[in-house]
Image (cartoon, rainbow, N blue to C red):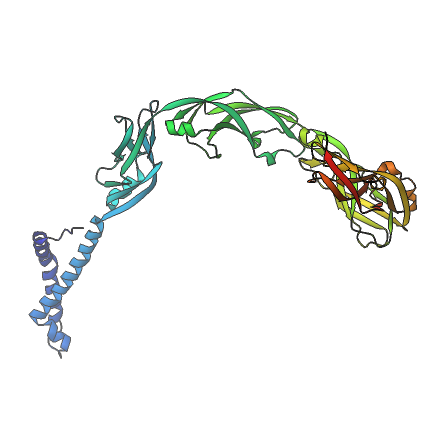
Length: 450
C-alpha cells in the first residue's frame, strides 16, 4: 500500500506544522522560561532558557503529532478485502440443444478496495456469477466467469475464475416408468398399500448420450408421509417426483419429462384370525404337563394378503426346564414374518402339572420325506415299516391320544440309491406329551423308480 507522505507533500506539511505548531510551541516554552527568571534557577529552568533545547523539544512534539495524524490518514485510506462465499453461478446457453458439465453451482468472490467502498459493495452484491456459453458449440472449452460489479471503485476476484466446461448435444429417449414406496415405516401398522397406479406409463429422459445409456430405470417415489389421511380407501398424490437410476441403483443426473406425475394409492387393511399355539422348551423335573391354559386362544394378525395366506398360527413359547410345580407365565407372542401388527402382543399361560404316566401306541406307520426325484424307498423288514411309540405325560391327557395324532418319519434328504440305516423321528399334535420310539433307526433300501 502507498502512503500519501512523498517528498513534496512532506515539505508542505512541515511548513504548515512549523507555522502553526513548532513556532507557537517554542514561544510558549520560552514564555514559560521567562516566568521563572529572578529566582534560584533549577536544572529544568536552565534547559528551557536555551534556544537549542526549545527547538529540539518543539521538533519532537511536532514529529509526534505528525506521526499520529499520518497513521490515522494511512488507516483511513488503506485497502481492505472481504470474501463473499457461495455465490450462485449461472451458465447461459441453449438448454434445448445442449447439456453442460463443469460449471460449479457456487463460487467465491473476493472484494478488494477502500474500506468504505468494500463495505458498500458487500451491502449490494450482484445476484449471480455469469458463465456465458451461448456462442459455443459441442466440445471442451475454457471459459471465464464474470461478476457484474455493483461498485466500480472496488476490484472483484472470482474463485474459480477460469472453468473447463464440456458441452454435449442433448439427446432424448423413452423409458418405462415404475414406482417405489418410501417411508413405509410411517404407514399405520394395521394398513397396507395394496396397489399404486400412476397417471402415465412412460417418460422421456434427456441429456448427454453417455448418460442416457446408463439409465436402467425411472421410478416415481411415492412417499407415505405425503398421505395426509391414512385410512382404508384410495389417496391421490400430486407432484410425485421422478428419479433415474443406473443398474447399481445409483442416481443418474438426467432431465426427465415430465418432472413429476400423479399417483393413486389404494390402501387396505388385510387381517386374519389364527389360533395361538403354545410350545414348550426344556424338560420338566420328573413331572408331566396336565394343562396349558392361555388367557387368549386366538389373535388377529395384519399384513399383506400374500403373507397372511401361509400363516396358520402364532407361537407362544414357554420354558419348562427343571420346573417342578404349577407355574404361570407371561409370554410375548412371536410375530410371524410379513405380519405388520397383531391385536395382542402378550398373553398369560397357566401351566398345571401332574405325575408322569407312560403309554404305548403300537403299529405306527413310518413315512418318508425328502426322497429324491426318480427314486423309491422300501423297508428291508416288517419291523422296519412300523414302530411302537412311547408316550409320557399326564394320565388325563394320554387317554385321549391314539395313533392318528402321532407322526413317525424318516428324512431321506441327500440319500442316493443303496441300503441305508436312518434315524426315526416322532412328533405329535399335543405338546403336553413327550414322544419317543422303541427303535432308534430303521433299515431301508433306495432304488430307481423305473
